[in-house]
Image 1: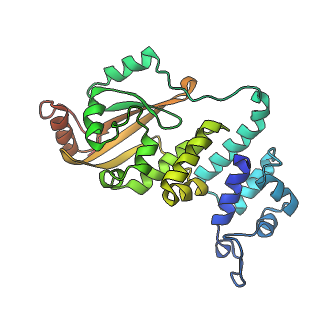
Image 2: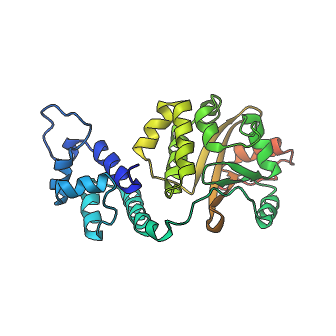
Image 3: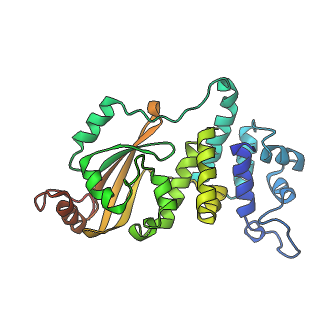
Length: 282
């Protein structure tokens, strides 16, 4: 399998149209985006070297080469950070080649205590595959009517892509789907379990997942606001904050109402007195 660094470079080359870099568009093109020779010329590297990078046969580009490729590919800030991260991971991988990555499903008691302490706010814990490992009662009341917790071992990524109810519940489903794929890529780190999970999603879902997996969206947001159509209380705007638990390779997500109407609706859903929850935004 090609390395992540090479696959990422190739995905961005194929997504860049010739006219975006001042090249003529006349003539028939067998592949989308820029040709390797065109990118090599723009970045002032040899076609042979660029081929080795894209095929994963060279994983140690210099900072100067990375900067030249980022400039030639017109990468935005998020893509540049991701490119640097991939290069750093590839260069460190040989140091831990003897170790075998694993997907953590163990929840530390301290994390469970923290979840319970957040009783007034829906909160849940994910591992890098999107398995929902633990959650508090507020999240149970929010998510169970959606169907997210129907499975014995619920998985957020699988629900978003493979459950037909997800697009109905999430008006910004496309952005949410991009974020799930971006998280999978960001936390992948050469893990065969992630690749196997992606292959299962590819076979089950097809193009909606496959196109994103190949496109490699990277604009991951650790916080923001998401719309939700809840079957019991209607429209909700929920802000979210994501805390990375680096030692566990897990993420704690905490949700809060983003406006007064959502706060009132969440109060009703959680069975709390009106005004018990404050919104975090106007």
